[in-house]
Amino acid sequence: MNTGFLIALVIVSILIIWITIWVTNKAYGRKPDVIDPIQSTENNDPLNKEPDRS
Image (cartoon, rainbow, N blue to C red; front, side, top):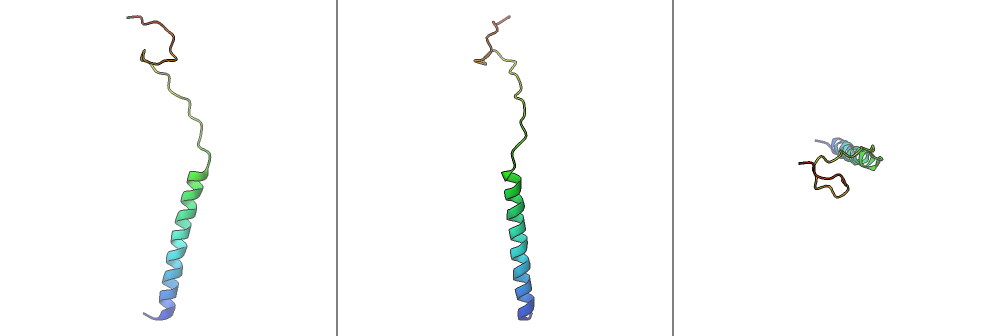
């Protein structure tokens, strides 16, 4: 293997690693969508003021 091939291999490897890090940071950096919380059906919810009907 000659020197030019090794240099090209190193540059391509660095490019792949850089693109992977960039895409990951872009994905984690975006604002997540707001998801409505699911209402609890159990009576142990402190915000649930409804009396127990058992």
